[in-house]
Length: 474
Image (cartoon, rainbow, N blue to C red; front, side, top):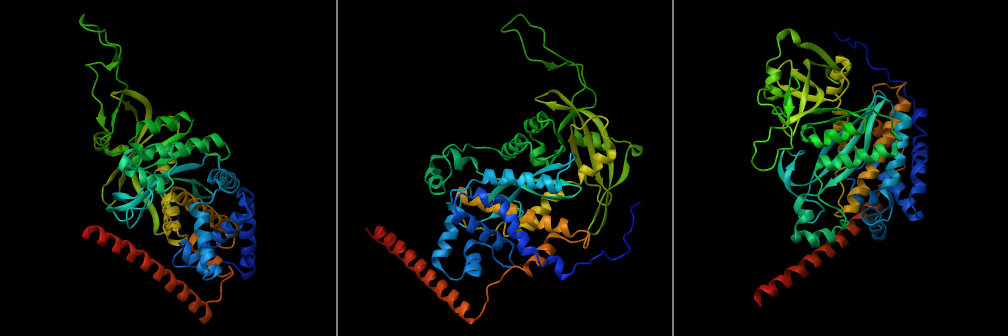
């Protein structure tokens, strides 16, 4: 049974608790400021961070600059250059970010989480854009796809790293060569699957050695890739991966042998499962064969709408690797109490791992989903209007920093307001961040800027169309 929360959550915040948030943001930016090589980059990084945290309906570069610096075309161009072409290194900033995450959230039992997130886009010119499955829209659509790594502990959760996924034709098709050049895709970039992108980020995180953690969780888009799982295990981490229902395992380790030579051709050298051994089974078949008394009803966590409860069964099985037996792993089956829907997971956690731990891990993909949702709704994660490789990564890096600043404020205020959410923290921040006076003079200034920009765009389109008509008439 779970404990019912009968009292209203405590909320004892006073104005003096948030009056210094602007100073805290300034101090937070100062942590990363030395990593921006030039004074202009340091100044623009502060402007961009303020814009992402501000109460603005659109957090693309132009509306942020208009709101924070006025209708200055030179300032808009400078902001666009800072994100799209600025020569500042994301890697050093993210490495420092991991140190800060460890200081505030780090735990020896911490969990890294990998997930994909898609960004609908119009037109064919943005880097990596293609008609592909878009998770945000739930259908095939024109979009960019990103892979993200998050981190969760009992203290909180945030984002750690990001990579843009380039579809295979973007990397290998000669027809995309001009697009790659226009978007500034580095020549050394090769095609990588989403699990390979996730692995590259995890490998960098592990090599840095600055963030404590033990677990890796992922959905079946990554869990079906056995090479990815084996690489994670090779780091000494314990994975907890959702896998497709047709994933093959054995209940008992089958015997293997190198077949006897028939006397013809080359002697065999590859091991095979002996013919008398029982075949591997799909995990869903094992799940459906679990006896009634082997299921236990467990509370995964206390959600925003009440406890999340499911039935669980756990078995030790042997995972398959290219038709041969692989590592001994846990098979965890989670069954929805109301619908009967099954989810199946494999984990290389030690045999002595408590069932309660395996239950808890089954509910630890939501932190990165929440991070991405809050990032899109509160911090403009998907509002960017940059087309370049560097611009996409720069924008995502600064969004990651903005998200973690909100996490830090929530941690500081949790004694006075333990139920405070990240959107509510950003609302607090919007009450104290300096705002430009939106008076009649500002409105006229912005309208004059927009009309000039729209007219310039009209002239450009008109020139292009007239040129096309002349070519057709020739």
